[in-house]
Length: 152
Image (cartoon, rainbow, N blue to C red; front, side):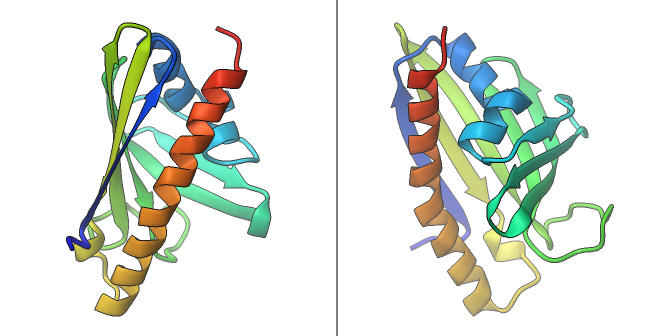
């Protein structure tokens, strides 16, 4: 098993433009991925934060790529690092969303990579990979449910 990368896919019954907005707009991302809001500066190098109520947790990241309706990527901190610290391959992973359409169905593929480069003991990298591997199907399920419940 490759413990450096995670790949998951989901089909969403919604046009690609709508799914794109659900993934890239803060009011949506902070609902289906987080549950306490989000902020996104939607440009390469822009800041990204997603908040959760439980544990007062915040994902801190940087937008890596914005290719409207086809690709959105960000790098997010995986280690406890000082506020404002640069994101590097040693302290973050890369999350890439790719969207393709087939009629009114949008296929979303998420790839998270870089676990093998994290500055952690191997057992902690493997544990983090396993945790995220189990988390992405849940989060993509939340995206499907959110898409079904949001007006077109």
